[in-house]
Length: 86
Image 1 (cartoon, rainbow, N blue to C red):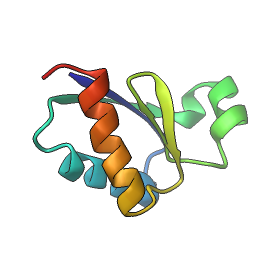
Image 2 (tube, rainbow, N blue to C red; image 1 turned 30 degrees about the horizontal axis):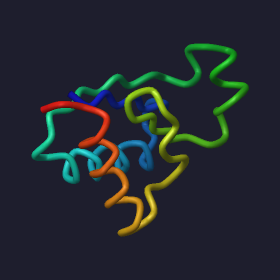
Image 3 (cartoon, one colour; image 1 turned 120 degrees about the vertical axis):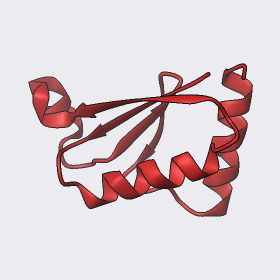
């Protein structure tokens, strides 16, 4: 199962878009989301507050702010496939 962690904040349109795109890309891959309000932790807010959304795939930083087009989409599929077992 691919573990996805999204640092976001309530009402963040870019965060919603990133999550939706990742769900589409990984539709055939078992995955689980953990969504964290970046403002709930002062250290997260200091470190990432201006750069959300932040996406971690299986514990590794994968993308900040936006998912770039095709190249990153293919990398995401590969990362999910290599780092997890379905």
